[in-house]
Length: 378
Ligand code: GMT
Image (cartoon, rainbow, N blue to C red; front, top):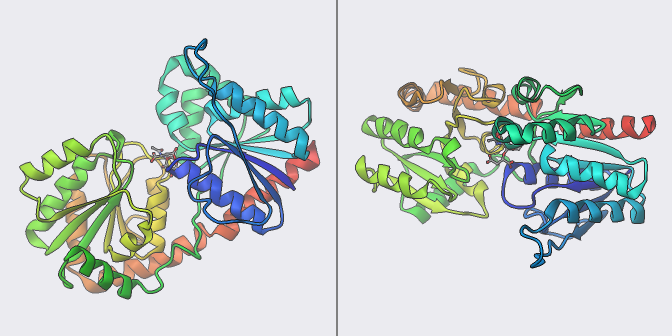
């Protein structure tokens, strides 16, 4: 198959999934064309069957705003014609599904449009009444629409009310990279690097530190845990909440116990060092970092927001607490860190569960089948 992919290429779950899916499709022998404003950040090596087409978004002085969507649509239409694409896979309803619809019209070809909804396009933009019609148009004008969790599918139906059926296809990770092989060695090396004593337990969170991630709940839960368990909290990433997080850490006198690691390219080593991974967001359609951490053997504690409760099976593969309930989250963390047998049991079940339900072969296979069916229908 000849497949075009458009996503936001910057750091973020949707870009990672789009890139990883393209790599996996190329490995399966399909011809994959990334049509993006930059090289996707995890596409760091030369992959056979992969082509990258970059769009230059010109900032003409006569225009008040750079015409990203139109330029992108125009580029996609050129690539559809030049490479005879059969499918274009758009990540995000707004703007990318709409770019895809425009591109198909410009190209005058019968290319199939698959759109994947990732969350921010629905849970944030979907509350903006000025964008609802555009989101609905992007969804209805696509041939196939997928959402990364049941929760996101249900929210899209409720907030946007499209005519289109939406299929849930969960996210996945590359298990060749994210796995718990060598965990103890990496843990020892990383602890030495950060001056963490061998017996100290490590809690971790990584994200773009936006308000929606409720990092203050993570700090407050850690504050409770730290009073009874010898532990540190490692925060990986950077973002708009950084200053207020630092302030809270200072106010709670946790400066010696919270490590701000900043942006990191090798997040895997941090997952491997961690005993517990925390994701306490108020909105989260899936939580890809959660899945990466679980594959690396870190037991998750999350909020019940969105798709998090589809990824974590409460008391079986990790723990859940209501959004904002950091007391309960802390009680779960203390409970599992003080009971080694329980920790091992949950960790073993967790590794089995994520390896089965979210295996890349299964998920990539679902997308591949969906592409094939669409081509046959065209
Ligand atoms: O919220 C983020 O950190 C980034 C955002 C994105 O668009 O890349 O993530 C969304 O898509 C990811 C991949 O499907 C999901 O794992 C995240 O849960 C989702 N974020 C939200 O729903 C807030």
